[in-house]
Length: 91
Image (tube, rainbow, N blue to C red):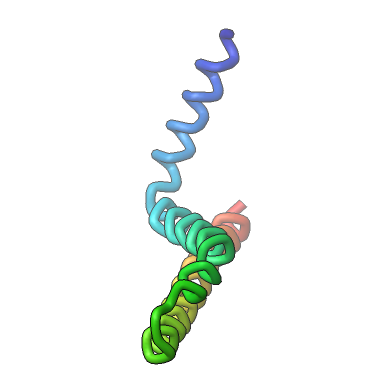
């Protein structure tokens, strides 16, 4: 039980020292959740389309969402890699 307090303290210290990396970590996690939810429910959404135009619109919206998610993931991972390599170079 005493170790739980130590782990919480380490997490708090890490968050305080790496506060700038938190938005990039959240962005990567959000993209992962988006892809998992899309893989599970995306096909069901398109299968329930009432017309071909509705299906086409859904495909275009999905394509735009995928493109934006890839851009966000690339930028966030680039930021995290830059932060990690910079901190390793200082040591």
